[in-house]
Image 1: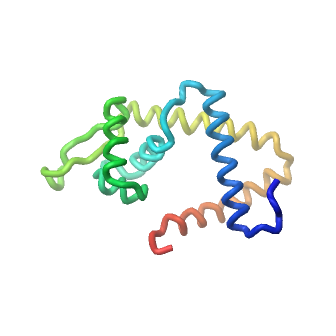
Image 2: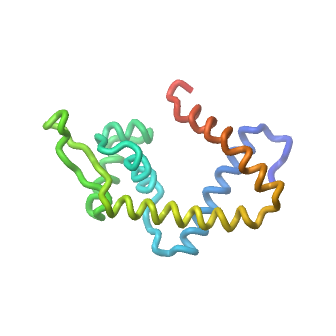
Length: 151
């Protein structure tokens, strides 16, 4: 457990980092079929919400270099997770869409994580489970503030 006198921002950073690391490690152990890098999962998540999308828009949304996103998208096209099409609004540009295989992979990934988190939440006592549930709205609002480029 971390030093309770540390600033909230440090404690939250440590908690989120530990949760992500533990979840990623447990998923790779419990579900060895999961081989997608997190950067590709995050792009699939964005495309599930905002598809079709231009690579430049994906890069901006993910705060990554266009070349990085372009490389990831190339790998995902080769894997059949996304498809590149001509942008109907500007035939000189292309857009990326989520394929059925990409949607299936994302669904399987989400379900595996939900099962793992359900197991972990069940291991907590009722007070801790209630505290986690009560914190969720504030955590979503915090994420919105972090997503806001003006923040």
